[in-house]
Figure 1 (cartoon, each protein chain N blue to C red):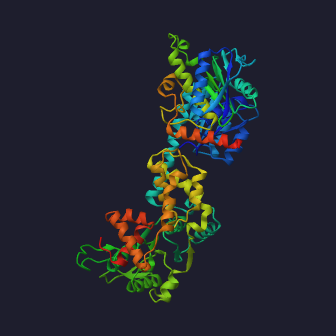
Figure 2 (cartoon, rainbow over the protein chains, first blue to last red):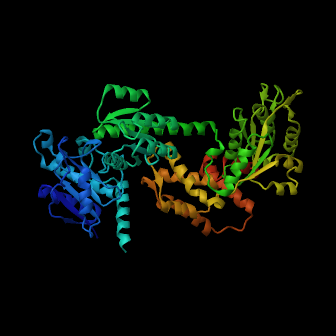
Figure 3 (cartoon, rainbow over the protein chains, first blue to last red):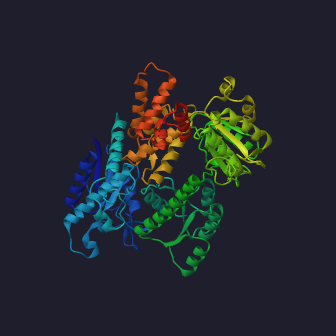
Length: 184
Length: 451
């Protein structure tokens, strides 16, 4: 069994972390382990933009992956950006070890709407699957209901399901199998 | 079909270039980065990128606009997107005037970039598809269109180039499905006759008298039903090339007529009294061993020597296995867009199956196999399972107990059963037998099969 660590960065609610652990265990056959909370990386905050640099977060995650873990998935409530883009729901190393999901813009409150926990959990599940999928080499899927479909706004996140389409599931499976075989 | 398109991001800030590159890679594109205008230009010389993201302000002598102008000079078809942190009307106007496809201000909404890239790629895909379909429609293939890395084939292609502008007769030999007509077209369209017609005639599909009138034309009233004076293929091909496929199947009478045309470049229409002069280059093809036919007295030796001025022998696919991966990838790219299914590639396990197969039907069989796999697959990349039918076919061939009958009878049975299965549909029957239509017609004629 391969190990994926779930790393809360900054304050993240327990129920969200539990939800992420569940979705990773059920969909990939990873064993999961929750790492102790860590502060948002120093220097990641951009005062002009009032947002956090996803690049600094990723560097921090890559450096803090325990050697026994194959993957590390960071979860944060901070609002992320990269220089070119105004925001990110998450980021991942394609075929790499680290992935990151921000819950900031998945929350109804961000848009001045009343909080909706179920909706937030569904979005967290989809984005966690999506970013972890990238670490297994999956690219964006044209199937709008597949978790690997690119979503650049919340309507697109809400349209897709918290599971992979057949083709993406098959690719993820093949990749997981070869990860396990590499150990033998 | 995203994987074939490459993107270059040009920005002196590495963090900015790399983070955008990583984001675009998640979409399946191959993305490179360059830290300066100069580096971008040298990248552009080596790789044909579909889209360039170029930062407007860069130090080191070459700014975004200059970089764009240089890139557009090298790669007129590429799309350049200018990125800037400070939008002013002036710079936007300059960028667009100099040929930028878009002008975006960073930071940019992810949706905006994603839509922009999608839109450009969609147009590029359509352009590529259009080009491919146009080529298929007109059959204007040049030697550059022939996909091969095999040394024997490379030698053939260099011969094709050398003889393309000569007038000498060419005889192309090769098994069914090796691409004899493609080579003939390449000779024609690579030479100085390219703007004149290329006329292909399958000598096996027509009865003798019909072939005669087809080749030489006829005068009004030459025979029952000859209502109008009609030009033959030789006349139509005047100034260009006439391609005589399955030349080994023509009757002794036609062999004599053909020899006269080759020697004198003159002939009469059927029922005609005026001599017609033509300048048509003759390229003939056959899958038969003509020297054997000559020895057996079935083919005139003088005609054989006339035809065999330049001989091209196309090896069967089994003898050029190194080409199988290129050909398979090419067919996947072409057929997936023709069929309209998002199959983006072919896996190593599938290539292994293709490399192990013996391809009795040659490239045509490979093309059919890839088409069948694309139609039936549920994956985005073809895998070994999608080609399972080849293993079944191979096993069926290996296990099949041949009844104690003659080779000819077996061939006849195969043709009859294929025609039966396809209910007389020639195209379908030919495909299942792994031969082309003209070869099938030849066999139908040979065995006197009633359709």
